[in-house]
Amino acid sequence: MPKAMGLTAAIGLSALILTGCGSKSKDSADAQPSSGAPAASSSAGAGTPSKSSGKSGGKSTGTGKGQASGKGATVLPMTAKVRSAMVDAYLMDAMKKHPKEKTADVVGPTETHYGKVGGVYYAIGEISLKNDPATKQDGPFVWKSPNGTDWGYEGDTGGSPCGKVPTALVKAWGKSC
Image 1 (cartoon, rainbow, N blue to C red):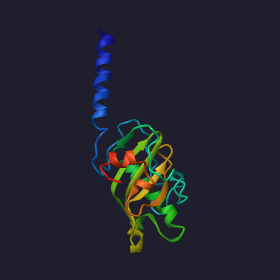
Image 2: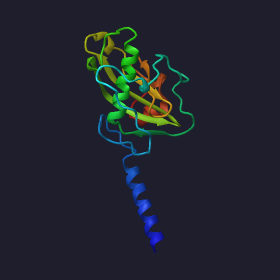
Image 3: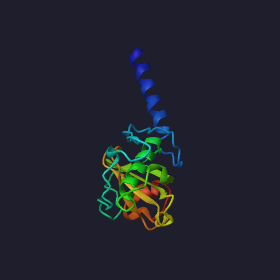
């Protein structure tokens, strides 16, 4: 009987966890990932981005075709840690052109979506610098992580994330290509 109870509890817990996996809600900043995905590192300081938050080469390292790798797309709830890592990776890239910018000068990210395809994590959202209106153009903007913690800023999309995010994930977010 105790084994049956343990199995029932495990199944009930799994069902509870899976209930939140398909959520398409935007910007639930304090939600925790329900799929066991690693959490992103938070900002190390208020003034400058942390070095652990991402390699921001500015170029997309994907196929550029927005195709899923044959594995299903998983929508994940946005967390404060992922949002903070997005700011850090964006700022690391922005500081190439604007070396005096600080975390406090970043507006966003807003209108965010977060998920993964295979083992690769993606996030999109709107983000800009307070003092540079031109940085608001051509969103949504894309971030990519090989592990859910080390985020790289992939750049703008020109209006459609499908060139930098797998189509299956874009569609799972309720967007079209």
